Image (cartoon, rainbow, N blue to C red):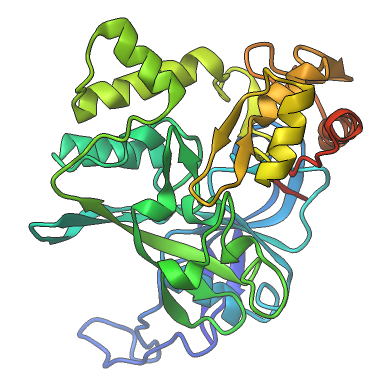
Length: 381
């Protein structure tokens, strides 16, 4: 049973990894050559503060860097790492760490970007799950394949995008999704899932759902494919974009202009995680029935809301939070961002417990005034 050194950090044995070959001239005839798989990168006692966009303190007792599907299978096959609980970590932009994760953290870094199919109706592009989402958006524009510009500057990795079904400025990932590859964290089997299998909903997917049918904590996404429609048509039905068109007099922006507008709008409203720790929008915009919406508008005529095709209303969670007086307020070192009440921030040295205390206080305030329960977007550990 050969022994492989893991990047100088840990020694792990790979059962069945050796393949004996013929001795070549000059070799010691008592030593056989081996063909071992590339070494896993395993680290211990890893500070996760720099691996989550909130900048919250936590320590991974064991962290494995995942650069390919095969790395996942080698983890699962290992007698120590395989049975341990696992946390899949991408860009860490949708995560609130209130404690140290148990077991093994799988840090996904799978690279790659390529065009896999082209027709008169669409381009299909594939990205490694470890690629930064914003870099993927820029890559499509640089290669003349627009369609993702409304989703520019969303933090996090490509692999996390379908988990959350990210969306912004009138577009959701589900509207551009083709399929993804994942590895089952129990069997090690590779699977390919289409949009139906992913069960996309508003900031939701099968990867956030537990139970028998859900895949929460059961799969690791390695690659994502997106279908970008041809000919390109801008998605402009959003208030901030309509304002930009009115301000500039440009009512037919091209893809690059739309990309630039979205980036500018986001930078004006949302803090840069590199400067102020945050996880983006902390709460989902609540969906209510038409009757509920009429009742709320009757009490608060200025509430920001959007009518949906199915008759329901989407309420602006940021407006609800601000109406309850939380904008700019803090509990401990966790606070509500001054420019956008939907965003909770780390004012410096905050703990996960402080963030969760603030979030619960906001939820109680909104429920007390409006009778609406806000749901959190990030995964809480």
